[in-house]
Structure formats: C-alpha cells, structure tokens
Length: 192
Image 1 (tube, rainbow, N blue to C red):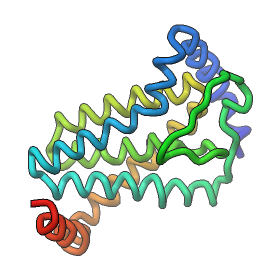
Image 2: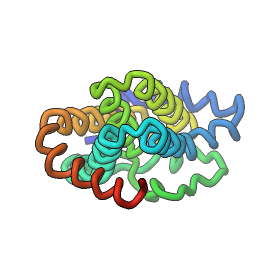
Image 3: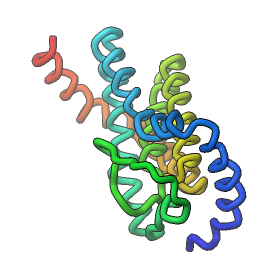
Image 4: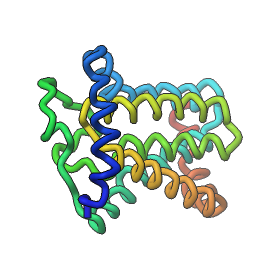
C-alpha cells in the first residue's frame, strides 16, 4: 500500500530533510518537544480564561484522533517504518508521551494537534486555534525534517485530526451533555 505514497513522499522528504543541516539541534527540539507547548495553552484556557468546556472538548478530540482513529487507520492500512530507519541522523528521539518506536503512519502528533486546533477554531477561539495551528505546523515540519515522518504520514495525520474534530462537532450536543459537562463539573469541585 505504501508504495503508492513513494512518488509523493520521496521528493518532498529529500527536500525538507536537507534542512536539518541548517540547525539540527533546533529542529530536534521542535520535532520532539513542540507538541508539549499545547498543554501550556490548555492550562491557560482552563485556569485563566476559565473556558473549561472548550479546553476539554479540544483535548478529548485530540486524544480521540491520536489513540482511537490513528490506531484504526493503522489496522486498516498497515504500518511502515519511520524514515529515520533509512536516513541515519545520529540523534535520539525519545519522548515522554508520544514515543512509540516503530510505525510512523499516520502521524500521532499531527492528528492530535490538528484536532485540537480545529476544535478551538470552530468553537470561536480563533486566536488560540491560530497559536495551536502554528505549533502544529512547526512540529509537523520538524518531524519531516528530522526524518521522524514521511510527508504522507503528516498528511494522513491531518486528515485524521480533521475527522476527529468533525465528529466531535457533529455530535457536540451529545458529547457536551454526556461527557464534557459532567467532567467540567467534577473538575470544578476539585480545582476551584
């Protein structure tokens, strides 16, 4: 199946991967830790802006994309090796949460970040959505530059994140009533 993507992946990957020579340590930091700026944004939304329902919807959509839909895509489409197995960059990529040695398709980072950005966008939090989208774009670019993902991993991850956001928005009433409102109420009792 992945042979289909090779004509798309190879030229884009080679072009972007050449950027790693410019500043490998910065690309590495962005590729590995860029996604961890999102919890800071979410904490701000939760505690400072007190828009807990939107923050929780965004997190749940991101987790749904990352843990449910991405795994479903892997079962259906199969898995493939990361490009780093082809291109030896000689630096580790161990992460706290996302590190799953092995398959790269689709990108967990991308699915997670795009779902969150789209929920914020469609819930009217355009500035926050823009910030998360910026983090997403920089992280996605760095993941290809550092050979963590093929370009099609990123593309399909974005589609998965978009699907997760669409499902959450499509079933917004039910999700709000059955999941988010009870969790926010529980959270208020614990946190403030």
